[in-house]
Length: 213
Image 1 (cartoon, rainbow, N blue to C red):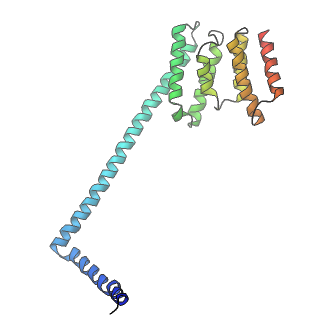
Image 2 (cartoon, rainbow, N blue to C red):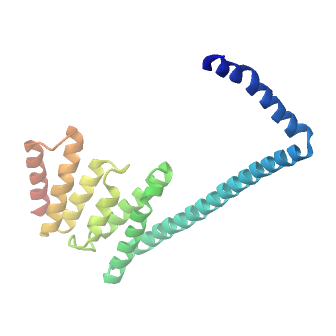
Image 3 (cartoon, helix red, strand yellow):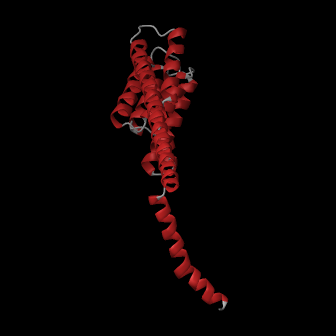
């Protein structure tokens, strides 16, 4: 018998018989049943651990989400309250900045939540409008405002109008002019699908001049 014939006999005759013997041993002998029972018990234990890990991960995710929601709501409430103050002092500025930081930290969560994201953008827009006559454009709050609103559901035109109102409230402030220039380029660039043109730059300078005179 050559090697090929032997291998053929091994594969097609002997191995199936051995497999049948092993199956019969598993099903009908005490030791086979014990072995089979252990295998089933191990599979059940593995599945139970997997399900337990999934439940734990889900519970942790839900808990983290609740903490995030609470931080967002607290920041929104605080912003609304602070923005209504007649005088925005240094302490109020620090509080607004802190609230903006909390919103920026949680932005990966809420930016994909359509309704919630729009509400937050409108909150920030409202706060921005209310503080322009009370806070100098030198404040870091302005950077926080536009960091939150850029590439948001708020249109670039609204942002540009916001920057122009900031300049109207502070016509001699160089930072306010720089703000209009920055947001103006962003706005016209979005309209052109690229960068602002020379004519756009001239339009921005005209807007600055009108609101600075």
